[in-house]
Image (cartoon, rainbow, N blue to C red; front, side, top):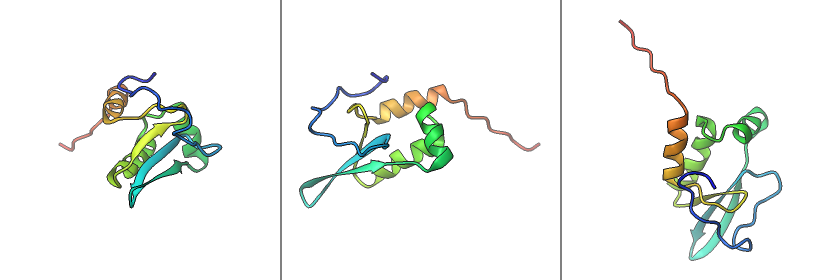
Length: 98
């Protein structure tokens, strides 16, 4: 299980569309709604190998901004704690002008 991940939900609770890496689970009018988070071409390949990269996080954060929760294909929730762990793996370089 990924660091900071919440234990899996029952398998019947999350339905992952074929090929999707993540599912955004939200509520609309009290009804749960699940939407697959998919990436195009090279971004999909990148996110499958390195989920900590910014393009991958952007889509997950977009789900959260809309009030949703993100689950990986195996049913574990990708929480903000998981995202913080991902950020520790990636070193951000900032260049400053003189």
